[in-house]
Length: 200
Length: 200
Image (cartoon, rainbow over all chains, first blue to last red; front, top):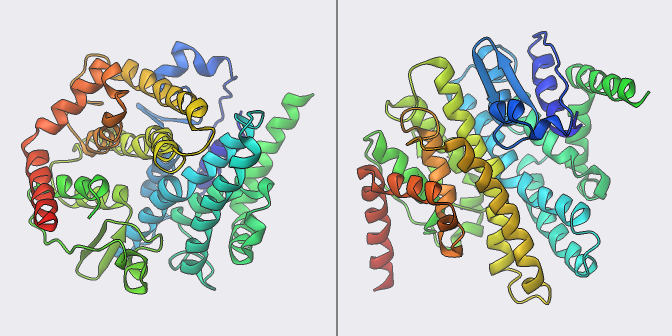
């Protein structure tokens, strides 16, 4: 039921044109043994396909990308670089963004919040400067749109509420291009429909 | 020249029995254009093989594991789960550990350090509790040793100076089993030899 990470999996499935069923998990159920058996860290999303059960968005998206055309290039070197960008998204760009989210949400009421937040935001900006320099005026990170772009755009999307993404126009445009993809639109609409149905 | 992340790549190469050459990069050179062309975030390690250049430790280790026997199981589902544990290492377990490192090293002199450190350490403990519960009394995370264990043990190793790893005996033993592997021993010795030669 979280907005952030299950959207990545829906998006990947829409990009490769694979149908899927959704099973919602409440915040309470996420901490219960049945869910912990699927996801030892008590989070979402999880993914089930026959006898295979996976957690970790990056691993699920990579699994989907490896088994269906549309998210990884055919050339072996280009494929390795697309996977490299997936790891860069979750291990280099996301950690400072997560730290900013934690600083705002979980430590927003602490006495140090006001003085510390700009430090954390600066770490995010440093990463975005480097990413922006690498992207240059290219459309995607390395040739055609790939699972690497799907993960990177998803990670950057978490920054939008902070206003920091808009300080980097080429990255903001990159994320907007990603969001404009029909597959993203379908994934987002499906997510929104569920949220709306739960809100009634 | 950093101890932490290039050891992961050395270790993977030792596990699969592939020889390699090392090119050292100084802290200064890491920020220069020639290195930024290889690694847009100005870090180490990078990896070069023919025309392919990669950064991101997870991507490099996965690339090595995909092309040489020894780090990924043959069964397709088990392979997907091994990759899942690689992502879990870098995207779920490492971020709070990195936050703890940053809190100690980069914010250790801040007025909030003393009050905030226990909060950050508690986030690390929560993850380790969950990981420890999943590992149980198994030797490795999912069947035989895999690239998932290589990455997870490497991430947990960063915690040792904090003393937190030793609060979880089964995880401390898991890391010790990983370190006892001949391939790890060779990688660590090679790293140590370089550090020693630089210290002279």
